[in-house]
Length: 338
Image (tube, rainbow, N blue to C red; front, side):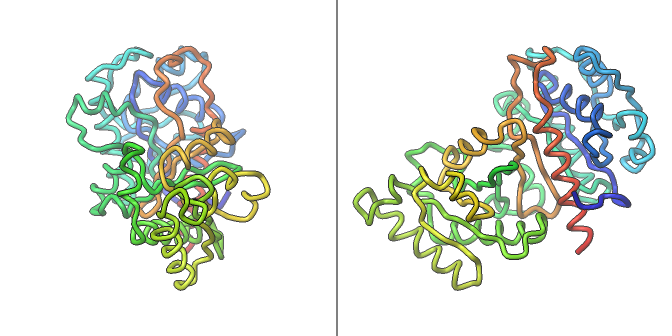
């Protein structure tokens, strides 16, 4: 990982307090030395974090700090927490109070990242069905962060990344029936360009290779199964190549993530949500990271949900949270070095 020393700490939002987020944050701090994690602080929820750690059987001291800068000194001996609101720890039992705390924590953690008080933002998982009850009007955290940063939603690109593969879904939270109408040459070029730039800046890949999937079976088979590959995807790839981006495709999606194929690209651009997320979750579920490209700050999140059904039982794997923290630290360090 790139050297994070000398940078501000990461800011971590709580996620839904009834989910696995709080216990995984505590578990990540408990493994900070073994995993060589950069310093981080949590925005709010000091009491519930202490209860979540205790229920998981972790010896985690909590230190309330006044501002993120104090986390650097505190981190070696205690989990630094900023004095935002708090609530009862009721794992598996989401509430409006918990959703309100999750949203408040997200907004404040994002603010610290925007103003540079935090070197990156790591977001614990939220339940959008709960956030809607407290006025959250976005399909997900990615769209919320994009608008708060003054960007249109297409400028914030979701990439799922693990040790085995990186994949970007062009369309995200929409019905499969809506996907063909949402695809365009402009959309593919825009998101692939943002992806290539981020691979260079944030991941240190000098000449990123982008593989673009097809939409239809067998990448359309010359128009037999649909014309999206001929009319939209192939022309977009030609434009990318003309702009100096190493882009290939359209590739049949069913073969794109085979081991030999994965070795030929640094990120795959996929046409819809499951086309990108299934391979990442199948290959790297416990180490998968959701990273938002194109924002003015670094943002990562573990690539899993709130898992209310196992919250508080001590069985949730902290691997993806640890990976999200490590990736955020590495990305922030590379940006600082430019």
